[in-house]
Image (cartoon, rainbow, N blue to C red; front, side):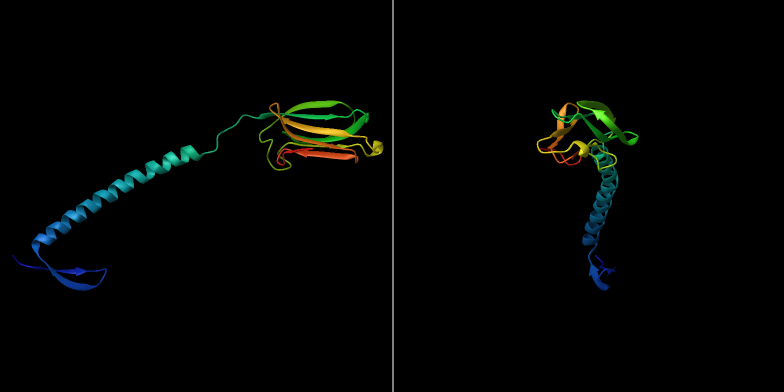
Length: 160
């Protein structure tokens, strides 16, 4: 049996190999090619499954309920957010309640739920006003103050 000279390009050295060892190397190269093929086929399949599982789910708009009430303050100025943006209402009689739809009630200010009540002309000691935001019937935020201004935001759930 004749030995064959092989140039190993990774190490740039010359070595001699027997034919038997060469056949084993050919088998190894063949199995390496097969495993590369499996990798090429498997990787896109795994990535496709990951993309489907991790994709955000499309949601229908959520119903948000804004509520303002007081036992002693007769009216307030209100600001709230709906699908089209912020709305301002002046001299609103209390109690007040409104349902709107929002894509993301817990989203950042400007896109999420937000409610502000201003009653500074009527402010005084123990003249409490409560503002609330409900998301689908669950209380998301509540703030009760007597300082003339109260706010609630969907992205900062708070109950006081």
